[in-house]
View: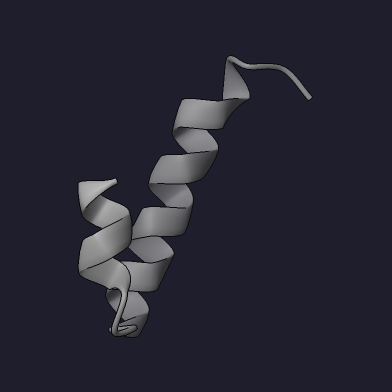
Length: 31
């Protein structure tokens, strides 16, 4: 793993979670 990929991966996860409408989506977005 390279640190360069981390920001993109986190952004992708956030988008997927927000799209899923999970209860803790806001918490992850804030974090």
